[in-house]
Length: 154
Image 1 (tube, rainbow, N blue to C red):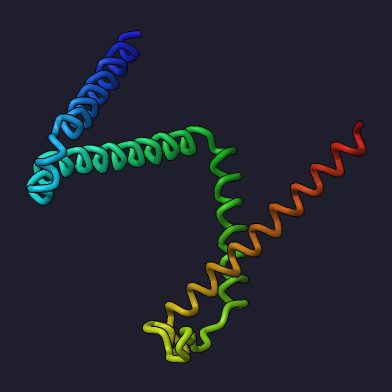
Image 2: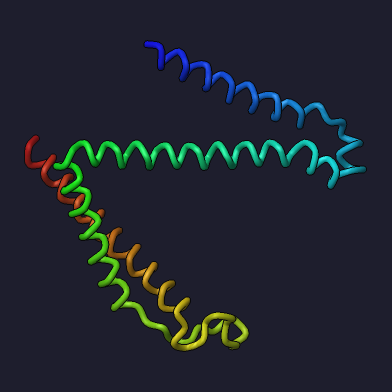
């Protein structure tokens, strides 16, 4: 119960800081914005962006940390997670071998920067496209399977 109160105080503090930073933006006069846009950005907008960025980093770190603690505490879930990651890794390898690293031309018929034949960037972009296609196809198959299963049950 005590940790719940501490958590509520921390949440209220974060909300208060964010609210104050957000209200500071609306307190600026429209004429001041037009005259001193760079100064305004440095003094008013940048603190809000920095605060939001650090809050995001903290949320990501806490989420990953709690997920890892949960996985370590429950070995069955750890095995399932590692199995799922292994399957995703195999699918990534399949996508990598399906992709190519051919030259990429722009609309003017010139070779794009980084699009030279044999470029690693080309290869990984192709891998990402194939990986998305493979995962989308698998998701579509499961969707159709679930739909058919639901129709058969009813």
